[in-house]
Length: 143
Picture 1 (cartoon, rainbow, N blue to C red):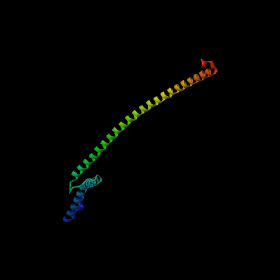
Picture 2 (picture 1 turned 45 degrees about the horizontal axis):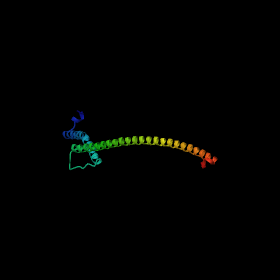
Picture 3 (picture 1 turned 90 degrees about the horizontal axis):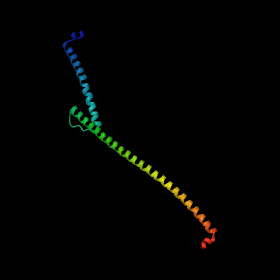
């Protein structure tokens, strides 16, 4: 003990002991006060109603329930978005396949069109030759 402590009167020593006790109690209550402040902040943040003078433990349970509900909701949303992404990816692949098929059909049609154009050109040339032959040989027309 402190030597100056023993030289003090009883009431002064008692006052020192009470002050030391109050300081000790205050220091012990600090974590609880900090936790209460934290819980009040979270109750406001999550808009959780407080009924009467509930203990910190019941309020903390409400906060944990709210956080779990929020996390479950977010997990569901993520799963929905993932499923939507899978569906969109499948749809895009299907449309890309359809586009490739349409491009192939268009190429085939262009090829057929070119063949038809060639055939028409040949037939027109043949027709002109026959016309020239007919026009050049009037007896053929008569007979």
